[in-house]
Image (tube, rainbow over all chains, first blue to last red; front, top):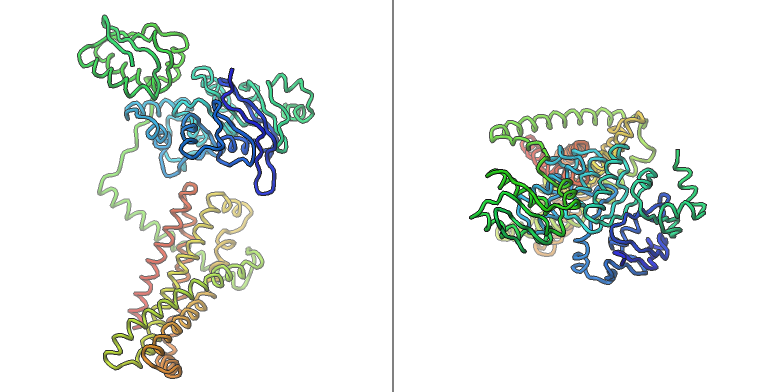
Length: 245
Length: 358
């Protein structure tokens, strides 16, 4: 099976500070890959570099075998149309209602009639259990609600690859578990490839097919959760041991 | 896109996704104009996404209204996708009722009154703590007054000087052409001194301070409000007005007359260049007439109203900052509102002063 994302020797830095160093990873279709690591280890930076929201200083990133680091904005936009991203803060457009936020990608990237767009928006909000917020504005929602609304926007176009930056942060355990179920059903039913940054051990156990473990900008491990726990890497053992209660 | 109706059954094949649905919808619509199938066959469907399910729901509603509608040939995977993304059982609240014309007018009046009332309330708090702040620095950080004097005063000097010089230059140039026609060259000094001291210097300084410092005050407080810094101050038993606003209030009270004085001097230099170069006045005549024409009352009024302008700008900037709602967009709106409201209020004050001290 060909990987959907291939990362080779990816190096990123802010000013003189190297935040990611020689990252190598393959992300396969239909898999949920969880990026783990302590705060400030470069998890979000890795996602931003893969999507070129921040330009890497060296290395290679391929989507479906196509190198993206040299692409111009229009070519990159064609790739990004098949990708969804849930940002850590939600990143909803504050001047628009939740309905309009989710409507943007559907209006601008498809030729679907308004009646179908309307149905899709309502279904997507219902999936994240947020139907009551349809006509509300982001400023009227709590942090957790914003995140769920942002997830509805990220999956508006049924992207082939979905990136989620800490989807469970700030959510109660029940909502967090429901979100994990949703991620699993997106993977199963739409064959979505999903990349998740999270610290939640329960979430990792529920959804992870593979994990990428980062520490201080270096990749210590890539593989399944079971392999990680048997690998005998002290930092990973500590991470899982301390997180358990 | 292959779709056909055979024996009252609508056969759909291939991919039903966001890319294929628009064309398929047109085809199906043209087929349904003449026939009313009672079954939809999905055995040939290979890909189904949420747009495809929305399409099926749309067809379902339309056909079910004309009789019983059945699905056939639905595989397990397709069935699961249909169940997950079906909009048929989704219930959403009705949008809020919009206000009528007269309701909007009434609402605007109530909002305007509440704003005025709250501004007055805030102003009283600012004046109270400002007065206390002169005698006691409790509740303020050490050095905050000096920092604010620098931010609101020193740093505004370059732009204020440049604009005042240009305005003085232009005013003098325009006036000198008319005065020269009547041989009244010498009156350029009177005109410049009078207009600059009594009207233009305080006004132009206030507009620059509103645009530069008023907006900065509003955005700073609005950002603090959005990021819960104001709440943090309250929890630490500190008055946000005393901690954040009073140093700005005291600083602007001191620096505003100085800025106006600076504006008068620089604009007089701009005007003097024209008077000396174009109207052949001597430097001595220009300066002498400028000083002689002014009275103490003119200068006191000028500085007095500049302080009132300054207080207005601080109170409005603070009020807009505290009233912020939402995130980054709210901060932007608060900043814009503060500048517009401050300039409006300053001009109203100026009109009142002109009527009182003509």
